[in-house]
Image (cartoon, rainbow, N blue to C red):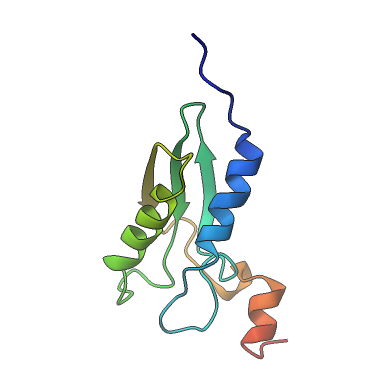
Length: 108
């Protein structure tokens, strides 16, 4: 009995849509546009690993933000499991922000 194939590109889009609903509490821009999401990996079992960073290592939401990302991604029906890994390599900088985020913050 083969399991149904999941289109990981479609699932990836769903994951990004969910991630874009999560905002940094200090900056009125979602964490994806801020450049905090480095990678989203999906395996054939629909287990998701998200590599992300924070604006600073002592970010006030260092404890809660990764958990929020994990919980929201896990809430997607097709996702079997989700794990968030925090990295500071490379460290976050404003260069990682999208044009949209820079425009929103009046940096363009």
